[in-house]
Length: 277
Ligand SMILES: [Zn+2]
Image: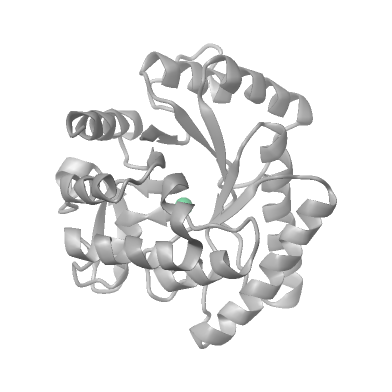
C-alpha cells in the first residue's frame, strides 16, 4: 500500500485560505493522502503555523513530510557547513512541530573529491545532526535523496551507506533521478529496480521496504544526467514496470509527485497503482 501526494501544494489549491492549509484540504478533495512541504528556499514558518499544519493534516488524514532547503551540502567548507547545518536542523525542528515524519534533503556535491572520502565526512556531520535532534527530543527521519547527476552526493550506494550507518537516517528514493543519473538511459527496467530494491533490503533490513519514501515524475536528461523534471506521460520513464516491481516486492510507504503538473500526475500514479491491485 502506498499513500500518494505532491511535493509542494497542488496547483489547483483554492486561493482562500491558500498556502499549506489550503494545500492540505485540496489534497483531501483530490483523494490524495500525503504532502511534502516544499521549504526548498528557506525555512520560514512560525511555531503557530506549524501547529495549524499539524491539526489540519490530522483532520484531513494527510501525512506530512518536509523538503528541506536546496542549499545544504554535507561536504561544504567548514563555515559554509555551519549554515547548511542550521538549514537542516531548522527543517527538522519545524517539521517535527508540523507533525512531519520525514525531512528530505539534497546531500550536496562531491566538489571533485573522491566519493568515499566525501561520504566519511558526510557521515560524521549527519551523525552530529541526528545527535543534536535527539538531544532536543525531536523524533524525525532524515532522508538524503538520490540525485540526478553523478557529480552530486546521492548515488544509491551513498544514501544506503548513510542509512546503514546512522540511526534515524533513511534514503529518499527519487526514481527519476536514479534513471537520469548515469545519463545513458539505464535504471528504467524491472530487472534494474528489482536489483536496487534487493540492495536496499540487504543494507537496511527485512522491514525496510515497507516504509519507502519515493519521489516520482518524468525526467529529461542528457549524458551529463538530469536536465529537469517533466510530465510522466511525456518522458521515457517506465512507471508501470516500476510499479509492478514495487508490488511484487510487497513495498509500501509514500509516493510524492514532483512533475510540473503535480497533482494531475499524482492522481495518474494513484490510479495506475490501484488499477494494478
Ligand atoms: Zn529533492
